[in-house]
Image (cartoon, rainbow, N blue to C red):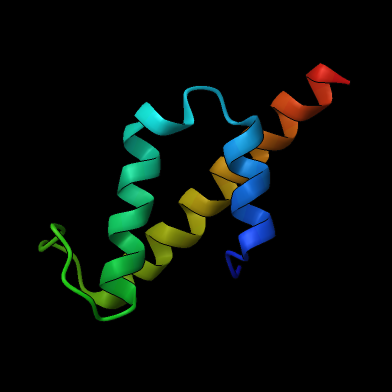
Length: 72
């Protein structure tokens, strides 16, 4: 699952407490690790990080969809 700008905009607009969530910060650090950048996550291989990143992406997107549909 690729995280496009539109994808993140939707999540940011609809996910409760977006800026203070630990799972959003974890997602960012996982993405850094997967991309080969410096990350504070040091206990996972890139493959493990990618698997966790995909699961976390799906969770965040699902939660954002649920919050959006409750507004409508």
